[in-house]
Image 1 (cartoon, rainbow, N blue to C red):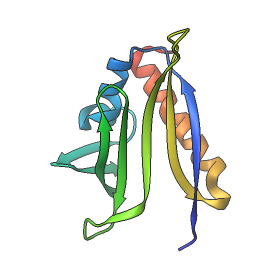
Image 2: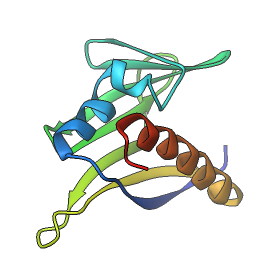
Image 3: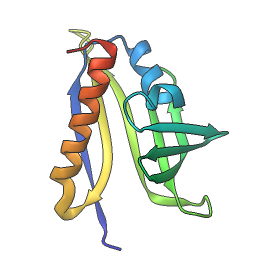
Length: 130
């Protein structure tokens, strides 16, 4: 398998950090914009899109601020890849944005970025931030 590269994208979102956190940290919140369905059992989350299913472990979270999911293999062992959703609040303006940290194959970063843009657009519509 090719080595994936890390990339980061920041999206301004008109929302309170508390509301946004519910949508990035809970199975019900994530299933409304990130995947078709999301189930959790303990620290393991299963993300379902059409016919595909991916498992991740909730590697860390800081309430109201960020969540980090580490992708796991078929034996539920951590892989080296993860995605992180981090809520940023500007100290002066109180503007809220969502920082996405993810990995993609070298030649697929632009497609992966487009996918995130579409998903974040769905999230913004959901919380009335358009």
